[in-house]
Image (cartoon, helix red, strand yellow):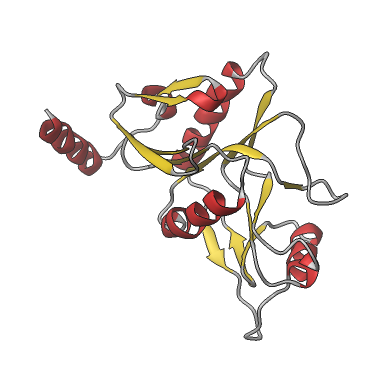
Amino acid sequence: MGLAKLKVKTARTYTVGEYLQLDRDGIERYQYLDGEVFLMAGESIRHGDISANLTGELRDQLKGIDCRVLSKDTKTKSGGLAANLLQSRKGLFSYPDLVVICGEPEFQDDYRDIVLNPRVIIEVLSDSTEMFDRRDKLMRYRLFNPTLTDYILVSQDKPLVEHYIRQADGDWKMILYFGTEETLNIESIKCGIKLSEIYDRVKFTTEEQAFIREIKNERI
């Protein structure tokens, strides 16, 4: 999902309470990071296809399991002081492309719109959000979401998936999947998705196809 910094008339930051009121009262969605508010932009067809493919595959595989996959409109909280949260200017509130929750969802408050117990988070990378997904989100998700076992970044312009997995000692390891012959294995929810399914209907450009062939040749 694209991300654009919200234009404000005054050079001020927002409290969490001000952000939540803005996000809940309007028809547009916003993300929040340490006082700064970001407007969520629309998605490309390619982004939509990849997100839909992932949602469909996970939904089918999670049938009969006490886990569910939610997409786009599920807001998560990562960090932020528990006391006086609404007056704070710290924390990350974000809308991942996909969230898997196991067991009953745990919510921040009675609005029931901020999930506290994600198991798996998947982001489909966009030019406008890639650095945010790789740096701020990666750090905050790992530090402040103890229920999170997997953070997955999916490229749009090549069949490439980066899979960050929490280890028993609290450290994280990364597995890289490249090529449509590979299979993304998410052991924490017992799901496996072929990259050919993730990228179904995605037509890579001539330049992208050339790059993919070059990488494959180097790996042989």
